[in-house]
Length: 306
Ligand SMILES: Cc1cc2nc3c(=O)[nH]c(=O)nc-3n(C[C@H](O)[C@H](O)[C@H](O)COP(=O)(O)OP(=O)(O)OC[C@H]3O[C@@H](n4cnc5c(N)ncnc54)[C@H](O)[C@@H]3O)c2cc1C
Image: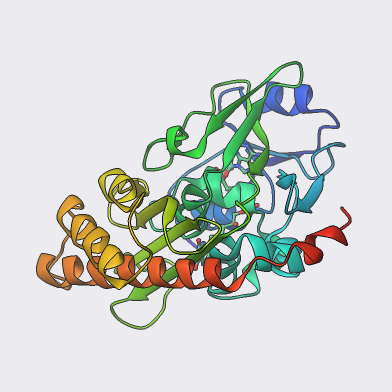
């Protein structure tokens, strides 16, 4: 593994327009916190002549977390900001749990959520949680912008829908329904390692009716099993209209175990991975539904400020 960084030019543009223009030139790459990019440069995975920092560009540091209006954070917002925000923990629990379980935790101080998402590394955790929350990715070039569902953002490992001359300006996460909850979990085969491919993660969102008896909406996502997180759409559809309870979650987990053909290797055979997918899927659904049952306190929302 190469340990010495090769020389590169470092530029700090002051507009999105300028940033994407510079970054689209051959041998240039845009970056935010630098956690993933510098690691890849050190390892010799990538080589760039010029790095374009977006951390000085005005307008990319926006942050808003409101249960009725949603969660939105700009490309400069570091992960720690979300970790410390009470409403992110309360309303976007799957994302918050994925953040809390980042290892090592100090990566939150430098890394941005947008950078994590844009890395398009198949075994990262935050994208799985953002799939469960049906996040929208905002892409812009400094003049115009477009919003795409995170489900359509990934084209393959380290490949996203961000085109030349574009960047992600922010991510929007819709507000959860009143009687909804979410959850995230991950499992490592061996000791926790940041670049450990021997990992599976899962996230779910469950919304219940006002009586908290029937499931009215659900997402179920399995990650780190392929090039990008996978929504288990058949399981989601099957959950809607079912009585909220163990049988529904077991049935959905069964569908998930059958739907995902996980990457396998000598260290972790398919049967074990499939069993873990079943367990994780059931657990995140149970946990999300339990959170949905334990709220809603409308008075809580009434006092909220941006
Ligand atoms: C030691 C270590 C442990 C980690 N552990 C975990 C873990 O347990 N779980 C997990 O999910 N993640 C983990 N990560 C990943 C970490 O969260 C990300 O590396 C970090 O969040 C990336 O953010 P950044 O701002 O540093 O991105 P950068 O390194 O600055 O950029 C990463 C990539 O995204 C692109 N990019 C950045 N911003 C934009 C933008 N606005 N528009 C378009 N492209 C952009 C860059 O060009 C680059 O290709 C770990 C990383 C390290 C180094």
